Length: 488
Ligand SMILES: [Zn+2]
Figure 1 (cartoon, rainbow, N blue to C red):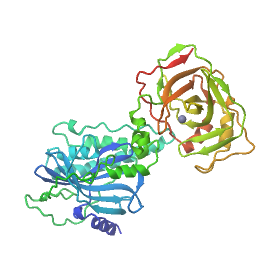
Figure 2: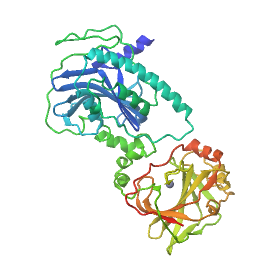
Figure 3: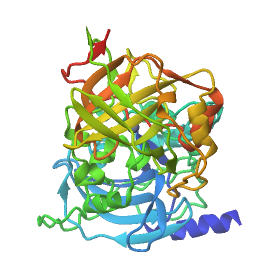
Figure 4: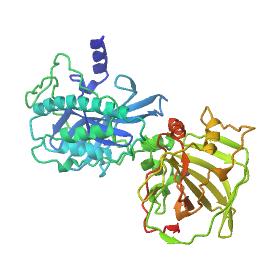
């Protein structure tokens, strides 16, 4: 059975018919991991042909077949002299074993831009080999074993801290060029990257079956324990200078046309491909999420302490409509408004985040409620009520009692009422600054009114929200010289 599986796998990999790939992580970033099969490297002068793949955290839908895929394998020819890439073949896979679609590409050589996925692979494959390839392949196998152990440990750790909100992953800081001379390239960094970036079980190398003949016109192919190293010299294919579309980039998801199309299908989210760092790429309307200089949330500190005009809350009991919209739990109520500086803002909706999006003096709270108001002139004012772990909150309990069973299907209980005055803290003192919506399209010009005194919410009530949204907080945005006022 296992042999059959291996056989079918090998049949599916025509360019690697003699050895199962030994994948090594070379870069790990939010939503994806880039892996390279070092044993696939074929050098020819300044050219290196390499097999790489992108492993996505979340499945995407193949636009041609409609089938989901999570792995994109590619054979790409890199020119180390001119820093260009030409992808020859792509395979979309649902998982290790199931192929969704294969495509042969007749692309052109395209320049590799700094910081892209192709750039990371190029830097790996163009680094001059310090040891012979057999040694490297052997080390790669050992490293793969270490990786598996590391991944197993990581999995255990992940499961143990499953209750905590996931930390916002930062992109990798590994600089391929900074590895010391003589060091085994990538083994240490790979471990680190794997520890930081991967939650899936590792892809341990499949032992290669009986060695198949390896064409070796220049040198005999050295054999490592379980990996057959190719030293085939490939005749360079013609290199049309015509600037093709983005066909030539294989591993560069975020800049290709395919990537734009893929992004068009991705809904914004708090992690993975739809995560905050990609919001602006998902839709041109979200541009300001990346370019804006007055974004929210912020870390509220060093405000000027002044006498602030009290916010006049005109809240009253009313029935409500509650919806789980896929990003948060959101509530609409009857007529409610606030007044400030002679202007009236009508309440549109309120919703929750866990943990609190805003920090106060570097500290986040367990949750926050955002009460979104709008004035006649279109200006938005958001009242933020920080929620601290403590006693049960009756207002929130009424909402949770009526929590919709399904996403995007609102519930409007006929006999339940809420009064937002019961959510507000006793002290109405507040911080204020100008910011933005904290979700796409991240529109600016939003007046933020953050209540200084938190309200309380019980651990059980926090746990209920966590079942739906473990982490729906946008990362802190730069203050950029904005003024914060603090009521004294
Ligand atoms: Zn919000």
